[in-house]
Amino acid sequence: MKIKSNLAVSDSGFIFNPSNGDSFSTNTVGADIILLLKSGKSFEEIKKEIGNKYEVDDILFEKDFHDFVSQLQDYYLVSND
Amino acid sequence: MSTEKLKYERPAIRKMNTGLMNKFGTRTEYAPFTHIDGVSVKELISNYGSPCFVISERTIRRTYQNAVRAFKTRYPKVQFAWSYKTNYLDAVCNVFHQEGSWAEVVSIFEYSKAIANGVPGNKILFNGPEKTKADMTIAIENGSYIHIDHFDELYDLIEVTTELKKSAKVAIRVNMDTGVYPMWDRFGFNYESGQAWNAINKIMASEYLDLVGLHCHIGTFMLTPSAYGVAASKLSDLAVNIKYVYNKAIQYLDLGGGFPSANTLRGSYLPGSDVIPTIDEFAEVITSTILNYGYKKEELPLLILETGRALIDDAGYLLGSVIANKRLSDGRRATIMDFGVNILFTAFWYEHKITPAQEFSTHTEDMVLYGPLCMNIDVVRQSVTLPALNKGDNVVVHKVGAYNMTQWMQFIAMRPKVVLIDTNGNHHIIRENETVDTLKEMERLPEHLNTFDL
Image 1 (tube, rainbow over the protein chains, first blue to last red):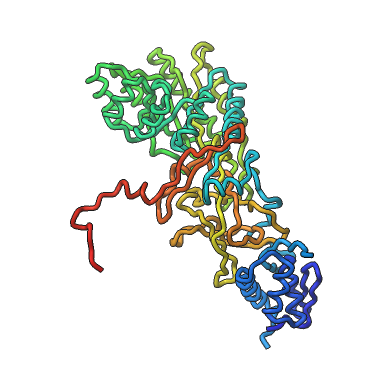
Image 2 (image 1 turned 135 degrees about the vertical axis):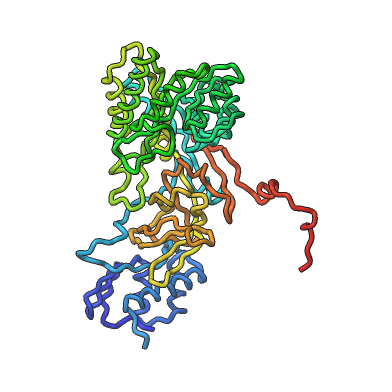
């Protein structure tokens, strides 16, 4: 699973999809995950990075991550190749 | 050297719309609600559990004093009577009684509570459609005011007083067209059809009934002050006719209750606080109608008000916690709270304001708030825009003082503690939570059902 390569993602969490003109806002954790996904990191790598930066345990993050990714899929922001 | 980690917030994303109105409304919460009257919400939850109800004594007194001021500055003789059904926890009732409120009850159960609280019998108004002859006897012996609801009750009362050879102080409840529909005509005697006047004639012809008052209660959550003007005018019309025909001055007019609180009704376009009239607007229309009606100065009736909701709703809070988050099949966020319609009965008709009790970021989500019951009806908010809430986060539901602590159900879960914060910031449990033992205490198991073999 990858974030679509043509998405514009700002550090502050603003996302623009040039293929259909949709724009989105995320909170800081959401923006971090998108940037990490965009750089090609795996779930395990992302979990480690987020765990180092934020006060969160692995189980909670895993639940939230999968829920967040399902939202990204709903918004057509990921490609499943 | 270790660096401190940042506070985690559930990742969330929101599509940005331009031009279209968000049907869930805009964000409403800008700051966490961390303290009630200076007491920390987290501390209350850690001491008394989650969920729990919290009542601010300071808010009750302030709201009551404001309502009294609104009426007493406009009319010389005003008496409030605390509507027990709105919240009959003894501690709450006694705050109102300390402030000078009489008791207004609608059943012998509430009547007994008022007596047990120490309210003198002659300061209790006994309303409601169900009063047995035994109930009437108690009320007559105590010198309470009996508000007659229907002819069957009137005939019963004539029988009881004749047997006792004792006089009863009575009023009739009058229903009427005040221009607000649907009209409340199930209680009392109708004004327009002449039924109320018939009841008055019957009472005046009886030996032991002393007609001292006229009562009405025109509706609930009334948003139109002018309806009270119509009511005051129609009651005054009856009072003036009684004076003319029987040369008897009516001692009091009881305008009942029905003033709204600042809650938002479901389906309302604007928040409740933006649409409800102030207590002064109700006071102005009621008092000016009576004052201008033409009573002789010495016969101006006492004005009684049975305001419930508007005096207690603001003082009540429900503290709760997030049990879980999930996503519905259509992509909507659903958050499950540890309180539902079992204890927050008013969620059926209000869109309650709900605020997180801890810091949050500016990012919000549209969500459905569910309660913990395994029942489809258990919806606290059908749609609300709130910051991302994590499992275990705490929230505060505002303005829940009216009706929840009387209409709550022991269904699936048990009822929680109720805590009062006094005017010095000390907190007291005023009702314990139920336990399995509380409920089992009332059950009886026939002997043949004692054992089974699975």
